Length: 88
Image (tube, rainbow, N blue to C red):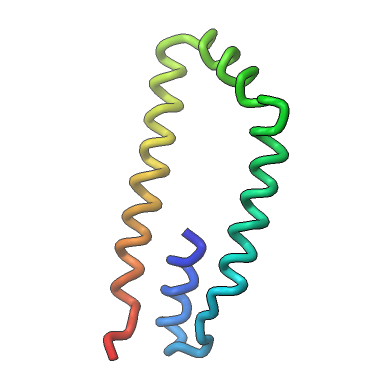
């Protein structure tokens, strides 16, 4: 999503910034480390799933639809960002 935002802004400003993969990869590694420490270390996600199983069917449906809307919106935003990529 951040890459899509970068592409759109870069195209709107007539390509003032050239893209480099090193900062992008560094951000991805940093995000992975944060997720690993906060979610996957010591199986913290299992306690979340146990709490989620106790929720009512309506709440599960609500959170499922919110998650689906976020994923579809992100994908649509990514596709829309191709409109701003220069074809040179």
